[in-house]
Length: 449
Image 1 (tube, rainbow, N blue to C red):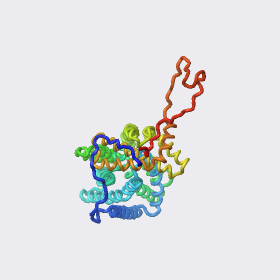
Image 2: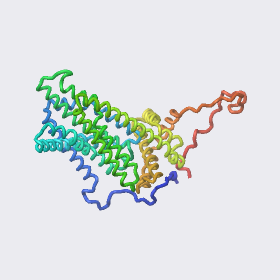
Image 3: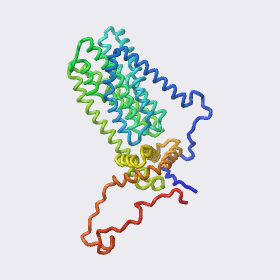
Image 4: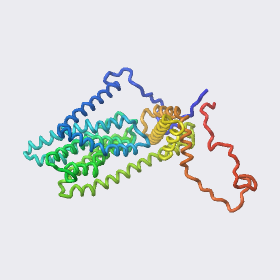
């Protein structure tokens, strides 16, 4: 009878955990399709309203110009965040939700709340100029960062399996802020174009060119940079154990406050004099961007190290081949494995290999949390699900990963001894190796009794 390898349960697992499944007597509002439908409807309505508001503000021609120019940095930013997420890729639907939330819901909240607050301050103080300054430096950072953080919170609460660490927080927050900046850039660029139409500004001296240079060329990363601080706070919270309640709340709030502070400094840079913008840009924005870039790349490498450290236990138990932990812990080997599968079996096979890599990475992270006592009550159920997903794809993935491991394995230098060696390759013929009679590792047969 067919048998599967034994489970290498790590310390900290929860025995007898009940299988997660749908509620048998759930109310209609608790059903998944109701929640998805409500969320989709909310985002669609927000999108239509924000579209009408921006078009009213910029005019049709300005809206089209702003839309075209604001689209330019979006593919680059999404590709950068997707690259960071390659170790354990999250579902595309999460990224689509985050971008839509930032571009529609968060932007609508920001426009309505900022306008209301600025008008209220202007009425209360009878000083419109100070109201605009106060709104940009105090009200806008608080409103906008809170609105963007709501998307990170929703993914953290309702897609907890996809939110396991700092990189997930960075990607979720960054994509949300990219969507927000996209809508905001349409508004600013469209308004600038309308101003040029009225004043006759053309060429590099136009308001549109100046706005494009500042927002698209110099600082396309500004909004993502602010909100990534919130995402890092949620990522640290995701690494905390369930019993560490203070840490799980304090880090997201701290990240949000830092995001608001940096956003306020950026918005208020014009108040620091003629060169205030460039001073803040050079002294804070660029160094912080470099620091956060280093942090996320270092975190990415550490996650790969976790994969190489945790998966050998499953190789010993027979779930993985002995070379797979090495191949799965190398982004170059993963890419070669997908290319090998695509070349020999087509795109469907390459997708299966990519899925195999993702499930194996999730399994490694799950075991890592279990060994540290941070696994949830569904540890056993989740581990079994991931192992089953790997087992169903093994026939396609193993040859590709074995090939990638052979290609990328570092060479082992062997020094020749100073005396002749006889017998290894046959007496008197040390340079002619015999035909190998064994494979590099014993093949695992799941049907062996």
